[in-house]
Image (cartoon, rainbow, N blue to C red; front, side, top):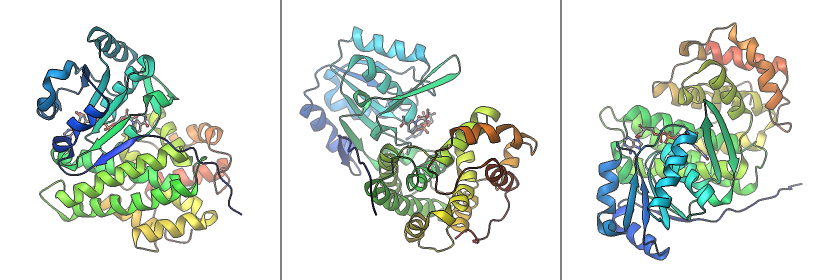
Length: 361
Ligand code: NAD
C-alpha cells in the first residue's frame, strides 16, 4: 500500500538555451525589481555583467566576495551590501557557492531571490541554506531562501571546465539515485529522479564520447535539465545513507567531495538494491541497463573517477574510525538495515574499488 506526504515547493522555472538573454529581463520585471543586488564571483563577473546589460540601470550594487561554503563573515558582508544598496531583489549568477551566498541574504532580509545557475549543483531549487563558522558548517531549511524564479540557460555552462562539469553532474546523479530511498521520498520525487538520471547520464555519455569539448549544446541542455530535476528530487526527498556516508568521510579525511560521491554511490546502490526493488527497476529503466551497479561504476571510471577511496588517500585503517559515526546518523528506514558490519563491508569494498558484480539485484 502506498503512503506518503509530499510537500510541494513553489518557484517559477524558466529553461532554455539563451534564456538569460531573452527571458531574464522580463522575469525581473514580473517581480518589479528596481534595485537589484547582483551576486557573482569575479570568475563569472564578465558573464554576469553581460547578461545584466539590458537592465544595468537597475543593478544597484554588485557583490563578488563569494567563498565556498558561505563563511558567516561573507554572509554578513553580502547582507550589508544589500542594505546599503537598498536592494529590493537579489540576483545570483553562478554555482552553488554563489546561490548559497544569495540565500544567506534572503534568509535574514526576506528579499526575493532570482537565481541563474552556472553549474549542476541544484541548490537553486532547494529551501536549504548552509553557512560555515570557523570551519563548522551549519545548514537549515527555510522557504525564504527558495528563489522566486530560476532561469536555466545551458549556454552559460559552456565555459565549465570538463572536470568541474563531470564532478558537478555526477553529484547530481547521486541526488537522483538517493532520492529513491531518502526519508521524504514520494512518488513525485521518484518520478523526477528517474527522469533526472536519464538526462544526466545522456549528457555525461556525450562528454565521455567527446575528446575535445565539455559537451555540445544538446548535451549541456540534458545536463542542466538533469541538474534541475536532481535538485528538485533532492529538495523533496532529502538526503539518505549515501549523503550521510559522504558527509562523514568528507569531514573526517578531507576527501574531494565530488570524487567521493562518485566512488561511493555504486556501493550504496549495491547495499540497498536487495531491499529496494522498485528503485532498482526504475534506475535500470533510466540507465537503459539491468546491471545498474556496473553501469554506474563504468560511468564514473569512463569519466576519470578513481576506482576506490584508497586512491583518494584514505587508508584501510581509517575505515573503522568512521563506522560508528555513519551508523549513528544513517536514516532509520534505509531499505537495507544499516549495521556496523554492513557499513564496514560497504566501505572496505568502496575503499578497495572491488568489483561488485550484480549479485545485489
Ligand atoms: P561553486 O559554486 O563553488 O563553483 C565551483 C567553481 O566553478 C568556482 O570557482 C566557480 O567560479 C566556477 N564556475 C561556476 N560556474 C562556472 C561556469 N559556468 N564556467 C566556469 N567556471 C564556473 O561549486 P558548486 O559545485 O556549484 O556548488 C557547491 C556548493 O553548493 C557547496 O557549498 C554545496 O554545499 C552547495 N550546495 C548546496 C545545496 C543546497 O541545497 N543548499 C545543494 C547543492 C550544493
